[in-house]
Length: 286
Length: 302
Image (cartoon, rainbow over all chains, first blue to last red):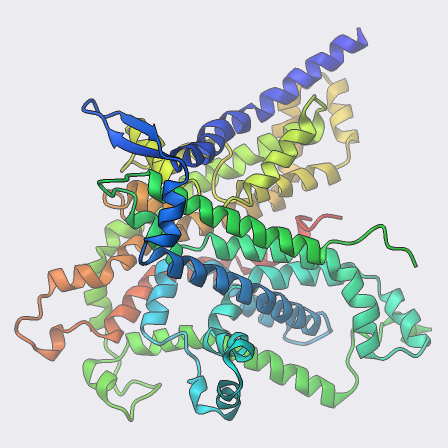
């Protein structure tokens, strides 16, 4: 009798989740694996409108890096901008969240302001703003600090120059992250801070010894969110490569599938590295 | 004792620190607002002001000509309608369907549930570009490209934009609701669906509102997939903005070389303004729901 009831509940549970399972198979899993499949094939259209595929091995992948004039550049630019922007966004949004986590008169106003870009940001809007110089708040080249960074070797100065050039865009992609961090900071009980103060810790020590360790899970979640958010953004140069080659007469669908899988693997690698760097190591003992 | 209660860490007594914090926050706020302010002033400037180097922020006279031109080129009345229904309908579908799915996960035990949850969360990690090509193949086989169903169907099956986040949000929210309500309803003879829409849903308004407004905004702003799947037939405002420069050149050929017909910053900024204005207004009206709901619905977990 009891077993019967459990079976019934399991079936009802499946009924609720069923739309997701069906949708997942049709709209996510199928396109996902089908693009992997196509990337290893040569595709041609048969007269009746169907698709004929012949095995091509790694051909498209090799072509992407060896022969394609535009893809490697678009690809590395996109990856580089994700890798450089993510830490900047995380650090910036953590600082803003800590500042906002105090009793300030205009706190609600600032929070409202910093969240605004999340609502209005879309590919074409950002493209228009960049094209019309609305996103370059200051011309950084005029300032001493920029010239200073230009003088030192390129490998060291590159991230800093990148930051100056993309300041507004970094700010505009931090809205959700600030809110995440704020709600994380609010969960830290104030008695911990009080205890630390009684022991004589100053703000600096409190940040490194209390706030940062306790906020760490949020740093990981925010990093993953930021990487995915930036990677899926409509303005990435890599998108141009993928969509441009979709209808190439000699390699329709398959070549852009290969490009999208190269991109996917790279994004997963970034996510894996961020996870390894940021997850809590449980084995370590004091 | 009272002094300890009001944590020193949160209240600032030192006026110097306080000033520094305000200056930093206002400075950052300026950087945030700069593109918007720039856009607003540029869009009201006449051609003379735009080329005049002495006019930087405040136009000498306010002109609505840019807006009128941008409105025509965008075909904004139609684009606005398209945007409205191609984001409202999937947003409604997404808020209801993800709630149903999360309810199933939260209230029932069944085999492979953990696997499903892991799969669900991992769908969030797939950038939309990866399935872009084959989604196009899929929808063109179903003869659904250039129709709105290319957007609606995935949302109906819980595969809308970032649906994994919303399922997680509902899941956490439902788990926080006391199970005693469910048990009482079962004793009164309610079935699970009645419990869902008579008890769980009315208690979950904050989660529903969050899901709905974020879906709405994300659907409104989505251009990569919708541009490919229905881009030429159903043109939303952001898609119209994407093709703005090309369309302008086609509608107002500059053969006569007159300054008035040349596309300028003012017109492009006016078009951008038109595109974001509906969202801006929505945000100002629903600001609390936007910012606070994200904290309250417990998406960040406990």
